[in-house]
Length: 323
Image 1 (cartoon, one colour):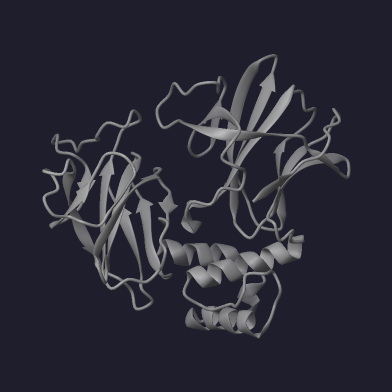
Image 2 (cartoon, rainbow, N blue to C red; image 1 turned 90 degrees about the vertical axis):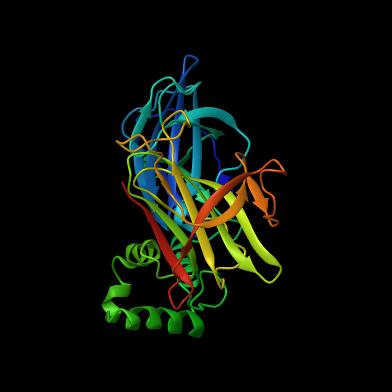
């Protein structure tokens, strides 16, 4: 991913974020004035579209940006891993003192320093991929990417139409008894909704609670069961964990709710708020990939009960963490 930068000229102009990538993006903006840094977000921006995030005079010594793809795509960063560490919130947020996180459900993220470019009478920050898509190409590449995640074969994700892309899109619409006009309006939203409800390949988690949920999954392979964790799913959000292959004979899932400080959250009766089952596998507190699940505690691991996941015919499933 690349962030296109240009020289900032102070002026009375609105500021927009323009998305030239094949992902539905969400962005947080950082503003520094007289040494004080604030952040606000999240701004969702469709492929091939711009969204105004500031109106009027831009009074700032420095501007920063953190952008990423929606979690339904997996862990896809648009801005790089290096930058100024600033605090961000969840949902629609404003952090007025972003040098350090002090509130619940806040997280420190790397923000790239950016300088907007002129776009007519206004200013813009441009998100781009190496492919350097035009707006129309970005929209088509986004459709191709979602078709692939939903188990259709659109051919290469290149922003160029062809027989495979046309056939895959027609099959998606036909499977849902939608006419060709559905491809003209709201198509991306329909595809994202399909992923949220488990119509694609692989596993998707959705968090319906008021707490963040830390989740792990396991998949059966020819050589055994590989367990991987952890992923953080914010309240009201869905996330697709990174998976080498969207299809598997068997999948298992575990989730545990945490409070704003990372401590276990509990039900009203005092028991931990977790979602698991009777398949005991090895885990540990930090990021892990574990293949051998014998003698977990003897080897310094935790023993955690995972629940089997019922897969659709396409090899997909959505696990919902409910209150």
